Length: 177
Figure 1 (cartoon, rainbow, N blue to C red):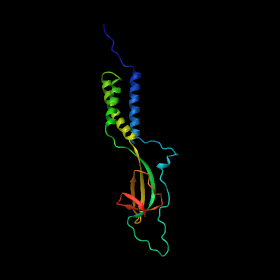
Figure 2: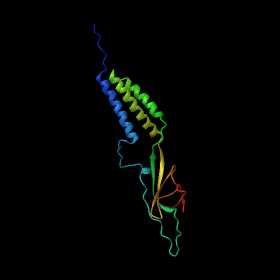
Figure 3: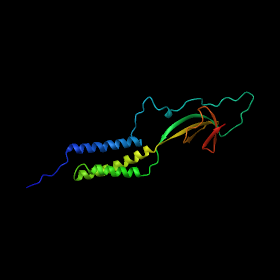
């Protein structure tokens, strides 16, 4: 008597491949590899604030003292920055993806899905960890008196407004001029 070999139903294989592809596409979108749509009602903090870009005119008869570190704020933008990953997300995602891939298929198909699941899970886990650890940084563009533009980053919302005259201190911080 010949015993029939147990075969995995094609629908289960298709479902496993679909889950794997969906996970890879989601991780790619989170990592910024795939473009994502932006609605017309963008978050106000992500839109540059426009305002005056020139320094106020000096009073007649009073000569303005030259200030090589002074300028006017051109724009202030809030930017989301991906957090640093530790590798724990990649390890956890790789293990989960490998286990999921191992549950699907048989023989060579199972091996391919296990390896693919581990690789996709590691990529997705790393992307998810970076997404979870993201934070907001404020980029301040200052048009210096010599015409150059310096961009500084702050971890908290700056107490300045667009068009305000400022002095760049040590190339890293601002103070009112």
